[in-house]
Length: 223
Image (tube, rainbow, N blue to C red; front, side, top):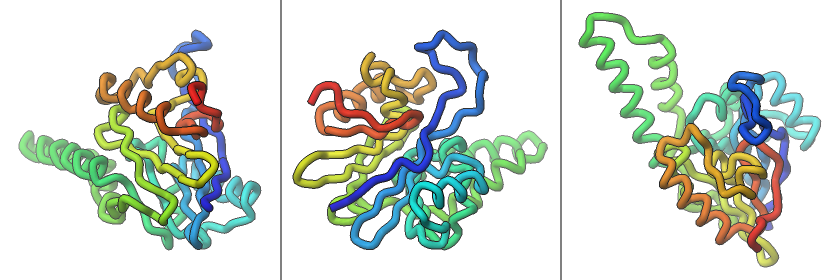
C-alpha cells in the first residue's frame, strides 16, 4: 500500500485570495515523498538543494542517495530547483511534458542562431538537463499511477496513489492551493486555462485526498 509524506509545503509568489501584489515572496512547490514496493519517489524537488536535503532528512530520515526516483509534475523551473542533489535517482516526467518543452527550448536556440546572436546559456543548460529525464511509465509501481493533468503546462501530470480505502492524487499545479480548489479556480498562469479547468474537475471526481501544488494536502470537498 503506497504511503506519502509531505516533505515541504509550497507557497505562491502572491496569493490572489489574500489580495497580494505579485512578487511578494519566492515561490516554491510542495515536495512529497511517495514510498511503495521499495521505490522512494520524490515529487517536485523545489527548494534549493541544501535546504531540501536538510528538510528531507528532518521529515523522513532519508538521504539523497536513498531516493530511487524523482518525478516532476511539470518542468517549470520552480518545481525542479534541487534536481542536481539526486544524481543517483531516475528523473521522470510525463512524455507529454518533455516533448513540448524540448521543442520550445530548441526553437529558442534556433531563433537565436538565425539572428546571429548567441542563445541564452540557460537554454543550453535546460536542454542538457532534459537528456537526463526519462518518460514516466503509466505505472511507477502497481499502486502508483501517472495521472495526466494538463492545462497548467502542456503535459503536466500528477501521481495517483491507489489503495482500497482512498484515492490520493499528488496534483501539482492542477490544484494550486486549497483555496483555489474550494473556489474551483485554476492557476492564472496556466498554459491552457480551459484544459486546466477540465483537469481540476477530473481530479475532484476521482481523488479523496489532494496534495496541492503550492499548499498542504486536503480532503476533496466533493467526496
